[in-house]
Picture 1 (spheres, rainbow, N blue to C red):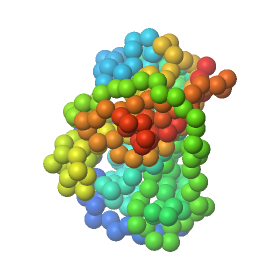
Picture 2 (picture 1 turned 45 degrees about the vertical axis):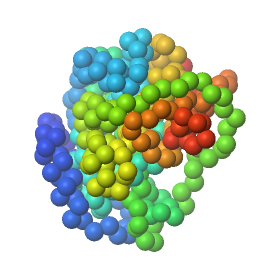
Picture 3 (picture 1 turned 60 degrees about the horizontal axis):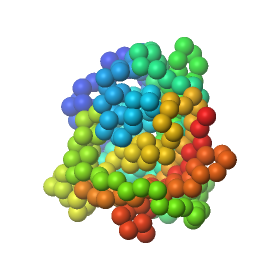
Picture 4 (picture 1 turned 90 degrees about the vertical axis):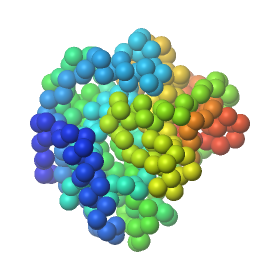
Length: 287
């Protein structure tokens, strides 16, 4: 496994220039992803940034460092990968299918962490090539948080790997728990705090350039907003949460939360206001 160490991430402008230049790549079939890990060896959890993220996503101070927050720390590495020769396809047009997170130990503001993004596996999908990226965060040598990003590169013919199987395809008997408004500027607000300024999230005009009738919410904002309502109003030491992104959440919107709890955790969905179309479906367990 080759390692690419990034001590000081490039500016957002430089990262997005790399993403734009990646559009020159020609999507096609491959046998495997190159085995490479991108590393930020020293990242400090910034209390102010955490508080801003929490406010935008609906978490309270009692939640501590939100379980979804560490994903933000991996973003410069993800962009570096997409803009490099290690990624065989353009970044723009790649679809976020799913995200799963495991938190092993509670995180605290001010801690110094090591952040890693590694290439994963190829999975065949009827719409193209699915691939995974493995995200890890370590504290003093111990893995305290990890996640798997599952992404789709559409229209790749003869995709490699085993067939994609949804892990969240069961129609769950859920009950309506709450409704919440999704403001039209949430894509820009979340984009500023996360660094993810993909044009499909920013405005109707920029989203229209990519075939969307309006801007759509970030999938990871939708996940975080749901967890802010689903999780107890305390910081948790361990948690495991997996979601699949089902349909775009167009902005602005009125969304609804549906859920059922059991002895192991909770199953939940974010649906449209009528409750008949899921935007996100997931499962969480925590301690």
